[in-house]
Length: 131
Image 1 (cartoon, rainbow, N blue to C red):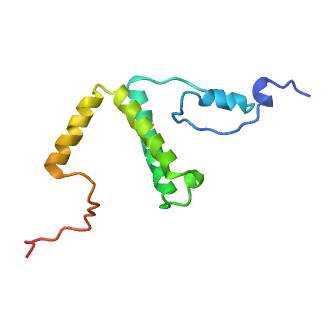
Image 2: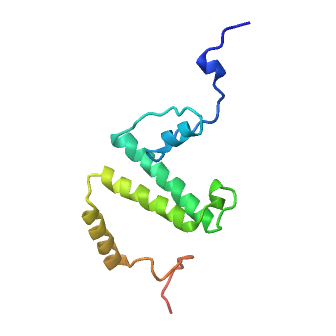
Image 3: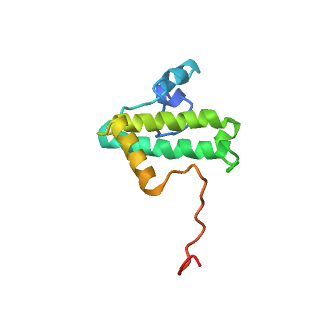
């Protein structure tokens, strides 16, 4: 009979390698599990934030009913939209740009090309005039 080490006794729950909310390690501990975490910063943090934005946007789309294969099916759209917003806030905070600078660029782009309020979907472009 061999001696069991802590790692032998630990039941493997899952591999994630994703950015999580700051209090998630505490929640994991409260559930009786041990989180294995590390902190990232700089460019690596921004890459993880970008991946998190894609994840949260995908969950938002799933909550709208576009994709029934994600775990977000039980979530409501406003909750998922709040997650997208939180990640965007973190991205702006981690960048070299102020919230005001980002807002100014949003207005500039809207002035140049419009916004998204009208729901215009470009299906194709054909050669020639509109006539």
